[in-house]
Structure formats: C-alpha cells, structure tokens
Image 1 (spheres, rainbow, N blue to C red):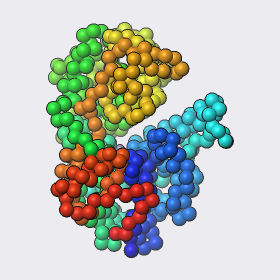
Image 2: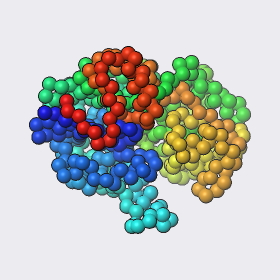
Image 3: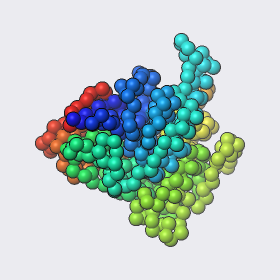
Image 4: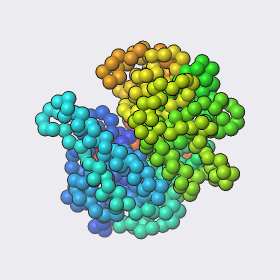
Length: 457
Ligand SMILES: [Zn+2]
C-alpha cells in the first residue's frame, strides 16, 4: 500500500514537501521552506511529521528556496544523512542559494536580537551556513529523461522550463504513476527549453500559482523593455531593475543584449550589482544541457548571450557604492526582486527622489513589500528609517513571468491525461479558479488537499 502525504506547498505557495511512502520506505519530494507572513514562516519551526522516522531519500524539483530551503534544517536539526537527488544544474545552483539562505537567516536573527524584537528567547537562525554546507554534501546529481531507482520505486525527470535545472518528476510506485509538476515555466521564453509534456499520470500534482490568471498575450516583454530603456536614455536618467538573482536577472540580460544587437535600444552601461546574480549567470552559461536552440546557436557563433555591450559586474560592496556617483544614463540590475533587502534597496533610496529616473519591476510583488508599495503608487516610502519621496517613474512590466498561466497549465494537463489531479502551490483564489476551469474540460477527480492530508494511491 502506497501513501502520499501533503506536508507543504498546498494552500500556500511555499514550503513544498510531499512524502511518498510504500513498503516501509519513503521518499520526500521537495524540501521547501515556508516563506511569507509570520503565521506561514512560523511553520518552519514545527517538527515535521517525519521527524521521528526520516525519509530514506529526498528528491528536489528545483532550487528555489520554497522547494529546497528546508534541507539544511532537515540536516542540522534532525540529522538527515540520506541522499538528495536533483539535476546537475539544480545541485550547482543550490551551492549558491543554500549558503545565502543561511546567511540571511543569521542576519535576520541578529537584527531581531539587536532591536529587542524577539519576545521570549534570543532569536535563532533556522539553520547555519555549516548546516547548508553539510546539506550540499548529500547532493547526488540525477539525469534527465532516464529512470533511476528511488526507495519507493523509480523516478524520471523532465524539463520544466521554469529556472535553470527545474524539472518535473515522475515517480512509479507499486504500479501507480505520479507526476509532480514542480513549478511549470512558460513557452517561448529565451534561454531555457520549453516545458516538456508530462508522461501519462495516474495522479498529477499540479502547481496553481497563476491558476487564476491568463498572462495578457498582447504584451511582448522585448517591446516593453525596449520602451522603458529608450525613455530613460532619452531623459538621461538611471533605470533600476529589482530582479531575482536566479532566472529573472539572466532573462533581462539576455533580452537587453538581444535588443542592442537588433538596434532597438542604445547601448547604455549595464551594472549587474549582485554577487549571487553574477554566480547564477555563470551557471546559466555553463549548463549547456539546459539551453534552448537560440542559446545553442549563440554559443556556437561565439556570442556571449548574457552580455550587453557595456556590461559591468559589481561584485564588492565598494563596487556597488561607486554606482551612487556615476554619470547617468545607465541601468542597474540588482536583487532582491521585491526590494525587501539586498543592494537594490540602496539604489532605490538614491534614485527614487528624481523624476528622470525609472524603476522597472519585472516580477510579482507580494503584499507588504517595498516593491508592492512602489507599484501601488506610494508618493513616499520609508527606507532604512528615512522617508524617501518617490518622484521617479515606477513601472510594472507585466509581460515577465516565470510561471505558466491558466491556459498554459490546462494545455500541459491535457498532455498528461491524468486520472486525478491534486492542485498545489496556490493561494486559494488561484486554486479555486484553476479547479473551476479544469472541471469544465477534465472528467477526472480534482483534489484541493490541505496541509497534512494523506491519500492512498
Ligand atoms: Zn520556483
């Protein structure tokens, strides 16, 4: 008898964890951290149901922290020592991302203690950089498109087209076939291959982040980006692009370079101001097995795909500070994507008060973040304790997204032809909307599992 238990990534987007058990063995698919408001991030501190009997093996769909960031906790707190399988590119990205997540944990704990915000005990990090290093040593690269044994049966990975290394996972257990979608990317986006059709599934666990939305198809990311670059160049301003270090930064660099090659924008100095973005960009370049045809052709022609003509890398804090005094126009691409921290916050503080400047957001801005306030048109914001007037132009480039929308998910599902679908990784609205759309075209059962639910296969 095989069981699947939903431990996270159910009614919230984060904390993705699914435990598959059969014949006294178990496999944990994804090991994500809960992120977001306090009542969600709090869940990271509770003992997981498998604390007493750890999984025999972990298999990750991709490197995003909401799918992988609990791993150092599993290692540091519960002494997990089994193998962790992931694609080679995911393993490399984790080498950058998990130590960074640990540093962020430590900084946050220090900050809370310094400010005396922690009510009972000193605030602690969920894990340390040493825990992250130990977790990295458990990584075992798994191939794409080949069956390999896992404790409950066998598994196979296919391209998800979401970020470098992202896969969807098929697991066969006691004659049942399960597909874990991970996060499904988009079709026709440069750099990575498109999402592959999922193999016929008895049960499909389907992400529903944008289950309630259709990306407007009249929006062309290149045209949108070209328009803002030309505008800011014309008025001699600085353009600040807050972007996630992994994925979005590379897409922006690629599109800027291509727009320059096509003569659609002037060649402005472009500063990539994020050590993690710089490292991630190198990995995007190195993992040729992930590249789509256009990327392969560029590499063969000797074109550096992520290098606009006047690209500069700002590695150190001093490099970053020097940008404060540079003569505009230029472009700064820096993390974090929602301006909740990182170097981009300093650039915003410096550039927001001047009307010739422009801030372009290229990803979802969650409620309560500085990015969201700016996108919502706040006339002034607080940064590092100071009030900052917003006179710069702030735009949201809606054409960018790393998640499939409703129409794309429905098309993907058709190819899987599953008997049952469990909708995961969605806020309520997205899940309900996708469930309603599925019920129109899909005759099988549609489940909306809650955290802790278990089902027999
Ligand atoms: Zn993701």
